[in-house]
Structures are given as C-alpha cells and as structure tokens.
Picture: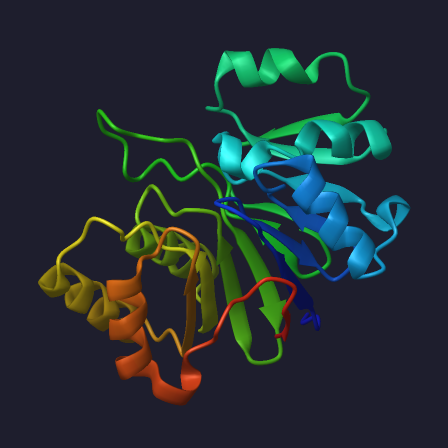
Length: 230
C-alpha cells in the first residue's frame, strides 16, 4: 500500500522539525517559539497532530516538545528505548502515550519508524530513529541527524523493507568529514539506489555541494516552511 505525503520543514536557528501531512510531527526544533510560530503561519491545527516522533534526545530536536505535550495532551509520542533517563523522567508529568521503539514500527498507514538504530553502537553511540514513508515513487527516509550514520540508516531500511528508496532527506551528520569520505558516502547512496537526496541541518556545505553536483535535478532543496510532496 502506498500513501501520498507532504513534508513541511520547520526550522529556525539550529533546530529542526518536520510535519508529515498534518498528522505526524518529527522532531520539535530547539525552542517552542520557533515551532509554534511556524505552525501558526502554515495554518496547522495542533489538534490534528496524532503523533510526535523524536529522532534523538538532543536539545535542538526536543526544544518545542514540552509545550507541544501541553497543547496536545494524549498525543502518541515515539521515542527510542535508549533515550536518557533524564529525558524519560521529564515526560512523567505529561499525559502523552509514550511508545518506546527498538525495531521497525508502524505509526500510521504507510508511515513507519526505523526504531532505534543499533548497528553503529560504539563509545560515541547516540540512540536515534528515522522515519520511513511509503509513496508511489518508492520509500522516503527522513532523518533527524543520522548520528548512527546516513549509510547505516539507509542500509537498515533496505534490509528491513527490500524496497526501492526514492528520497533521503534531513540531517546527514557530515560536518566534520573530508571530501574523499563525502564522495564515498555519495557513491554508496547511489549504489543503494537512492534516487533523490535532500541534505539539511547538520549535513554541512561541503556535503551539500558534492550531492548537488552528483544528483543535479534530483537534489532537493530543504528550506524553512517549504512543502515537499513525495
């Protein structure tokens, strides 16, 4: 089964947040003012949001969460089982339904979380999940920061679904990588059959430049308030 989704990208300062259709919020930016200003400007009704998915528990992805939980009591909240205990303790006063995920999990028709990506465990490991959308063109993967590695994330989705990947967008966490490494990552994404890319947030200008040259018209520009149909 396929579904048609639109993704609105909300971001000011260093934070990031994506709205999938008008029902699922993926990350909440670094501050509630930014998040709710953008929601208001786009005419989004908070009562229509059915689920909030947090990629990882860093401040620039969770800053607007607490006010969202106040404004939308009872919402489903998807988090990784490996999030910090401090983060989990902070959730206790709220009436959200907390769902801790380790594995590939359905959120709504045609929309899934990868679950916590454990393949890259190591001394600097950060528990993180990504979103996967089924569309007529293939799968779209939306990442928060891809701390476990953008290649690791895409490989997990391919292994789990055995389906073609149309678009990978979001944070690729490539700021500190040199050009040789970036070219290797670009080439591996192509080997994995990724048709379009939309690096943003923590991807870095060098990575964006390499992906633009490689993907050309299939490079997706991700910007504040932009609606992307997939």
